[in-house]
Amino acid sequence: QVQVEESGGGLVQPGESLRLSCLASGSIFSINNMGWYRQAPGKQRELVALISRGGTTIYADSVKGQFAISRDNAKNTVYLQMNTLKPEDTAVYYCYANISPSRSQTTMTYWGQGTQVTVSS
Image (cartoon, rainbow, N blue to C red; front, side):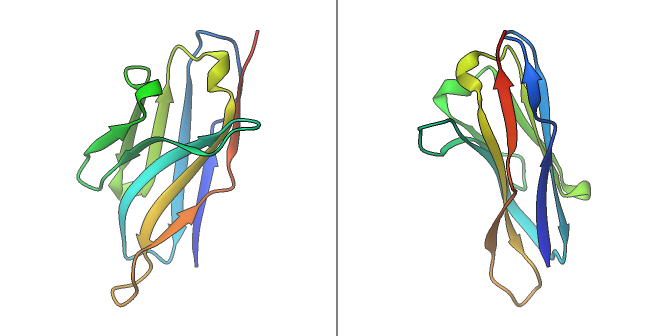
């Protein structure tokens, strides 16, 4: 069984930074892309950033230069460093990972439960 779990959310003031972490655990043969989506109240879930196993990154235009995604393949962990946070960054942040549970199984997308990030003075 595979689990994906986020941590690091919370309440911060505008201009502050926050680092999210996401650990994939359980029966894992390989992990391809990992990334982050977010969903603000009343809005659709949107891609924030993703990173390939080899380190290629893609960012939403709205967070380029502000957020940085990274991963530690040895730890099956992906991170999202969020700097200069703004009230419009307030959302539930969801981590996902494209995982093959075994050599014979196809890759599936696994999601975390989400972590709340609130930016408010």
